[in-house]
Image (cartoon, rainbow, N blue to C red; front, top):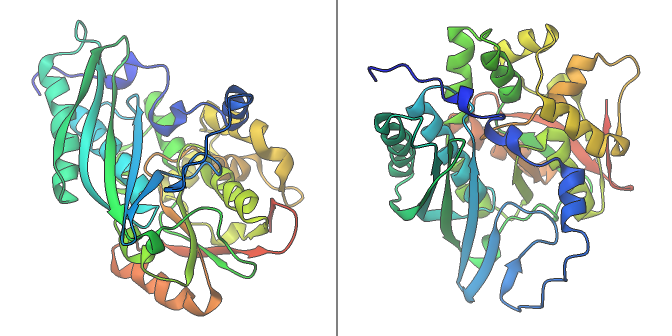
Length: 347
């Protein structure tokens, strides 16, 4: 583009760090009428899963999600790519295959050049094309802050659905991508993110979690979700609550983007990390004398983060190999599910 645009200057937050804090969201939803019973609604709102699932017949289920946010980076094309990748991840996290997308667009048309808006849309469309699906329409409004994302529709066999509430005691936890996107975004906002850190950020956030399609077909993968705005601890707690189990998280084994670890040690963090901990910290047991920067990394909101899989111990080698062969070179075993009251023990 000829005119330099800094998208983040137009928004008060960015990426999945824009999410409403878990405890506030729970309070907002409390007291709403219970969802009526629909026999073909296989996944609804009860466990905070990644997408809704509706059974069409004995061999087909439709999977639907929407995800959108304000800019996490300044480059319009990169913003569009990251937002689209993040939205598609919800379909993959259910073990499904996307079939089409609709664009969700809100732009301050009096402030942003049309070329910048076109580049955002083009970035999202390019990711959808890489996923093999069209952007078949959408909706746009004039908004005070830039907003972009997708509604995504997918399909799967009803027996291949992967929920976040079906983990079993003894399951091993595998994380597909390293943490640190929120830390890098905080550094970017302050003008302290170098070129290598930016490259790590964009490469990670635009890597499609399409491995979820094949994981959906594995009976030994019991639960699946993606790590986004509520951070690793928050999304692992959703698995714990839904499954009625506790989890052990091995801190030394959790992968972290190299640039993010350095910046986290220097004190860079998002406000969302603090809000996340305030929401669910009472459900987490931490080691004594754990540095604050490590705790904040576990609460770091991930934009287009990795898949978190709970699988049978006998399947770990094959599942981990599948991640690595699909290009998720940092995928690692990070813990296990245990009998006990829902909660996470970090060791």
